Length: 312
Image (cartoon, rainbow, N blue to C red):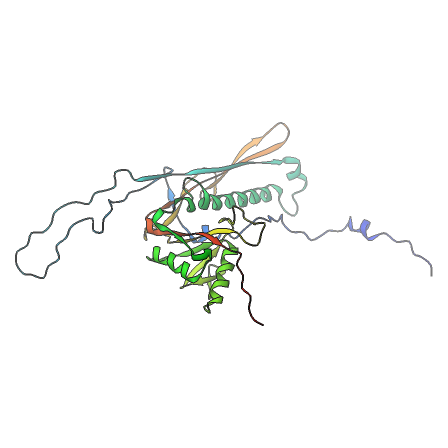
């Protein structure tokens, strides 16, 4: 058989058009917390939570069925002298795009737009992490001492989640847990013969307990990491009531930013330097506020590495 001389496939492919995707951001998450949390826009960047002095009834009242003459109590409701103020924190980055790249390689995807989209996703990921872990306003760091629960033997059992519900009993909105903690709770509930049912909310499917969805997030770390090295480890589970009308937990953002692209996020063009680099400043201003102590509770030191052996 005569051997034929032919153009190689590798060389031929250089002239062929190919099907390709947009740039894929591997660390992107659904960011369910920012979807489920209610947000309030601010004008001045400062939010003050005004409360009243502690007490079961801030104003004495008269309760009587006796038709006789009674003296009606008088008084006023005392406001807290030093209410907490929340100031918006900034998360910012500068994105540089070589104008030669955007000029020459913007088909089929416009390079500057793709770079900005990826940068915005990165800032949104950091925003959600700060809403959970920031030392000043992060939810995990601001749970009142009275709202901490310790699970027996460290496992996220149905009893432990019931203890959280007892702390946030006024219309709790959702649990928040690392995916490994969600899986650990599923094992514990199944072991006790009450496997959690699933609910569909906002395009997602979630496990639930007592009708309350358990929202997964990798912003609640296991042993301080998003992706722990070992199978086991310890983490936290939050239970949150959200909404200003419910005196719950709310996110805060600045309204009407110059160059606003999305809620609380601005993109500003900084110009082109002498080397042809186009520069963009991306900024998010955010915070979170807990409007009442009983709006949040946390299950501490949750062990996620316990498994059960079942008979065949």
